[in-house]
Image (cartoon, rainbow, N blue to C red; front, side, top):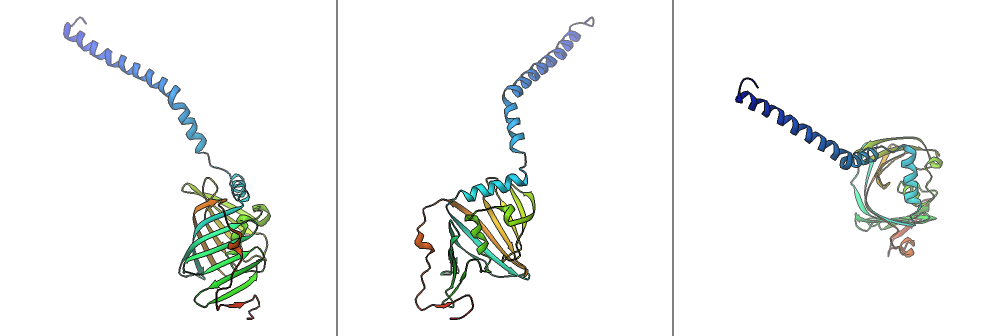
Length: 242
């Protein structure tokens, strides 16, 4: 300051910004400690990835608690690398083991299980194929496990999972070689809804279900699962006789 007023003014201008910076830093630290800290803590908690056991138990509880279920599906089928035309419609499930697939595309196609027998109606051929649910090799049948006593460790083995976006991809192999499939792959949301189910069979066929619009425990009429023969349709039993 011995250099005169100019030097003094320069020194004062140099001191005041430092004081303002320190004051703002103090306010920022207080704001972080009082306001931001809970948010940071919440982010750390929600960002934690669930382990495989947590996912499997969550899926089991989600579907085992349901008595009825409705969901829109898109079904695609690939045989030895050759894709067939996709089909879509509404799937209704009722515990135990009852299901109804109402197809919008192709219109009129129907797949029904009353818990014991399975009926497949193909309108183009005006034919109904009937077989026992337990004996059915139709790969729609595995979805009945969603409304059975779902127990992954009892039915499957060799589990793997990994994050895929905000969901999780789980793969598992069937324990029994008597089932019509040998491996499944599921894409599951954070709230344990199955968005996609891929069923792999031993003959290298691949059946994929995209699922959305899930409704848990909607009112469902039991009559939906009692198959009615369409007029003039031919019935074929499991042995192929008419």
